[in-house]
Amino acid sequence: ETLEGLSGLLEGDSICLTERGDIESVPRHPSFHIFACMNPPTDVGKKYLPPGLRNRFTELFVDELLDKSDLVTLLSESLPKGLSPSDSRLGSEDIATFYLEMLSLPLMDGVGQKPKFSLRTLCRAMDHARVLLPRYGWTRSLYEGLTMGFVSQLDYASQNKVVATIKSLVAKAMTGGGPGGKDKDKDKRRMNAPKCPGKDFVKIQGFWLEAGGPIPEESNVYVVSPTIAKHLTDIARVV
Image (cartoon, rainbow, N blue to C red; front, side):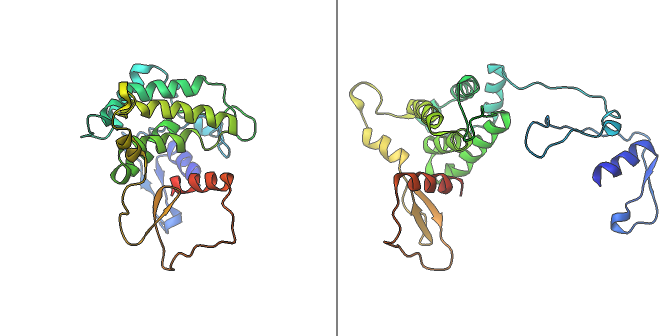
C-alpha cells in the first residue's frame, strides 16, 4: 500500500490519504523529492522494487564497505567514550581486522551454507556490546556482542574457529597475557559476571537476567547437559 501511494504521488501532482479518511488531495510541493535506500534483496522475504516504481529513481549502487580505513572511521564513532586504559586496547583497528577476517574465513552456517556477514552484522554486534557495557564492562561486552553477531548461526566447527578468534581479540585488553602472567585473577573477574545488580535478578549461565513476578524455583528433574548449557548461554546473551 505504501508503494502504491508513492507511485501515485510520483506520477501525479497530489496524494489523497484515504486510509485516514481524507477526502481532499494534498498537493505536491514543486520542490518535492524522495531519497530512498534499500539493501539488495538477498535475505529471506525481501523482493525487488516493482520496475515501474524503481525506474522513477536515479539509482546509485553503494558496494559493501571493505576498506579497512573506512571501517576504522565507522567503528571509531561507535566505540564508547571514557574507556579504561586496558579496555582502550581494543581499538577500532582491531575490530576492523576481525571483521575482515570473518569475511574471508571458510565458515558454514547451520544448514551448510556460507554465512552472509555484512556491515549490518558488525553494527548490531557493536550495538549489543554497548547495551551490555554498563553491567559487564567493555571487554566482556565486546566479547558477547561479537559472539552474538558472528557465532550464533554457525555450525559447531565454524563456531569454534570464530570463538577462538574473538578470544584472541579480547585478550589484548587482558593484563595477564604478558610476561609473568600478572593479574590473572583480575582478568578472570573481567570476564565473569559482576555482583548481582538487584534483588529481582537471577544469574543464568553467567548473565544477570531480571526475573518476573513468580519466585524462581530450581528443579532436579531436568539435566543440564553441555549442549543445553550452551543453548541457555546463547539465549541469555541475547536477552
